Length: 73
Image 1 (spheres, helix red, strand yellow):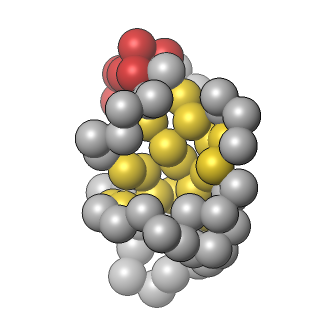
Image 2: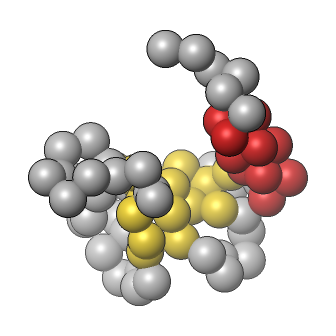
């Protein structure tokens, strides 16, 4: 594991899906709160797969930008 990834996230518990994820599944992002090195983010379809770890400040800035629609589709 390096400082920016977790190769296998299956042993970590407490993942939560994005509030924008629908009940039909599909492309869902999960985050893990309380991880000391930052905010791990993974694809919910691959719970044994990797996660990227983002610095808390960077993740907070990203979420704030999404909320004000700074990334139009």
